[in-house]
Length: 135
Image 1 (cartoon, rainbow, N blue to C red):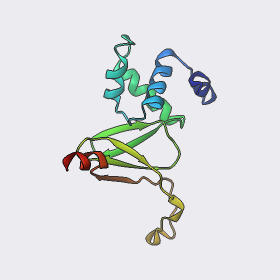
Image 2 (cartoon, rainbow, N blue to C red):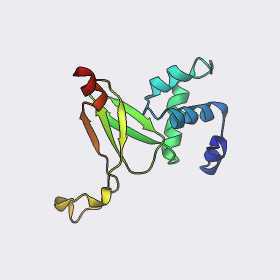
Image 3 (tube, rainbow, N blue to C red):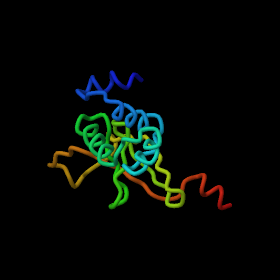
Image 4 (cartoon, rainbow, N blue to C red):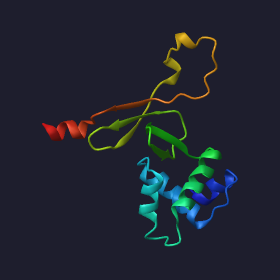
């Protein structure tokens, strides 16, 4: 992916810090928090601040190139995949996995006369790696 062009296409000025933040999101796919991104990039970008990371992510969300993932009440994570999908968080290792879900097959009988704007599905449990390691 040509990240500077991707940013420009979404009316985002491709500054060095913005490019590196999106590059991290896109390449790592680890659903990071602001702190995780900051810690991973500040060594290579000494002028980077947590405020810059936060403001950049907010811009990315506002422009629709990043989405937020809130599985825990006190933790906002970011995802470079904006298409509809679900998430699974392992209670042991904390890893968050993307899961494909057929949203068209979900039934909402109680919401017959409602308009649904967003659907978020978050599952929690133990991943296969952690279950295998315990055995």
